[in-house]
Length: 472
Image (cartoon, rainbow, N blue to C red; front, side, top):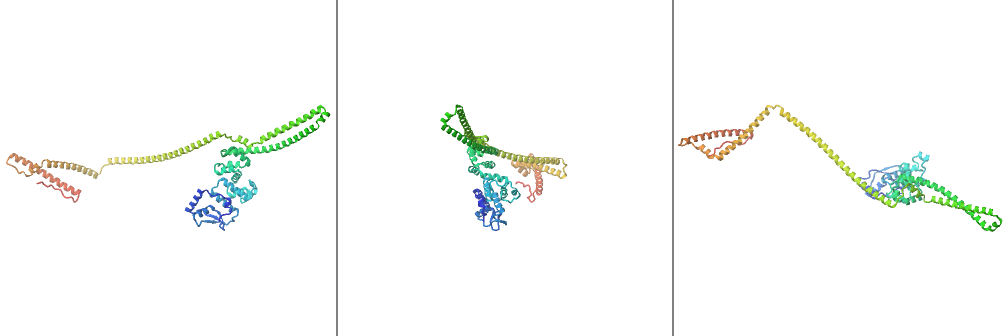
């Protein structure tokens, strides 16, 4: 079951996109970090995980049981720290949590930040130190964030919308009285407030504090001057009444010298009255619009036309910044590509160098092979190759010669094979010569055929033997 203080301390829900992502993650991966609960099943840490698991349809979640009282400071500390870790609260949300804790434990504004007892006990919840211990933040940070609660609603809205992100500046402005904050916001506007620097905010606070002290002193002086003016006015009125009632009597009884003294006294009272009135006007003028005077000293008074130019300059600066980022991105891409190309070039250079080494080695080995004395087997192979090449040429020459004989002199061959002589001695002689040539050719061809048969027997076992067949 949820802790009863969970909704009080953390009334805001997570943004929809973060909540959906949490539910999806738990649906896919389950609850990885166990919930921390008390023996009566009160959740101390893990409210968001429990709600997300329920929405994801889980029926069981891992838990760690801590034997603590749900209302104890330890339980509250666990509750708050877990939510701070999981929720990623804004500074203003943390400030509101600090204010709730201060109200819960009855801590007055500012807290007992210097009390010896608070410094000696980390568990004491009666000072801002105790709140800092519960939240798990430094005391200085807690004090700074707590001042955000003193901002007027308009300034808190600026923080909440994200348009004003300078919480350090906001905490300084939060120390000013509400009426001064309203005047400051009215003078500077949203843009002016959001662009205040820490130094400007601190200087504004210093001068406004000094102006406030001076204003209090001036108000006291003004009150005294008003009293003196009233007294002089009464004296003058009494004197004028007396003069009016006794004018005739004075004229008759007093001589001219006393009358002049009386008139001088009246004139003196009137002069004092005028002095008091002028002093009062000066005091009132000094008391009017103190915030405007301080802002004029510290912050540049913005002109509408200049404000438009400034806004245009900001837009141009933003555009140039985006352009710069694009160029830087492209530059990084080019640099990355350059690095990859250089790495590839180095790899190719290494490969070329390696291939060059192999080539040099091969050349050296080839040179050694050329200069090395050849063994008998290699010489025999060379002889074999030479004879085979010679036989090839002669075989082709023989084939060409036989083709010419066959194609051009077939009749002569037949005649030489059949002629046995004739009645003419010349014919007998020519026939005898042709027969001798044919016989010699026949013997040569039979010899070649025999050699070819033996060669083919060696080269191609099982091939049919060649033999010369005479054409009839």
